[in-house]
Image (cartoon, rainbow, N blue to C red; front, side, top):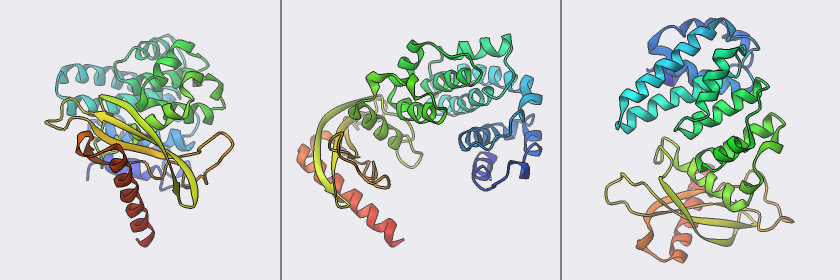
Length: 289
């Protein structure tokens, strides 16, 4: 079983960091364990279970791994699958850098990463600089939030750091957050596995969901390199119908879904009905299971 499957799963399996740290870090110099270990560290960072100072003895190794991964990604060229796999490693390495000792080399590495072509690498670099008390400019936060694949995660992580004030106000509209919600759903390995190349709002609809009125956002999205797919339709929701209304937290965005139907296959009303029917069926199957 690949370590990229085992190690990330372990991050949610232990209650006390002392159960696995610092021993697990001895795997870091081993090439075959790098992706799994960096994913594991990223999840520990998110869960708050990464012990303070645990990565400091490995600072030089982490910086070398980053430069190596950059070179490998450049060599991957037009191989999208390889490029994405290496970018996944880079995102996790940059996250780990937020727990290192700030020096000139680390500061330069993270500052350079703010210009990375991968939006998630850029976001993680900005957050690591923030952790190291090197707050990026407002322009950087706006550039990151402009990416639907980053927008909701950026908001969540800034709020976790009690720095929600840094999130650009122009991206707080429900339409913008709903767009990011659908893109994150599409990025799941069990769905499309990556963000679409284009996404546009079609319209909003209101419907009852689980006993509450909810607002649903329908989008069309496009994967440019997929053969004969064209524009597909997906939905994010439910969201509150107004600022004064609420939806139980367990139902918020619980119907975000796509049937991967072509935009031209049916009317918008038919798309909406099909999506509601499909998500209701999935909810019922989950409850029965």
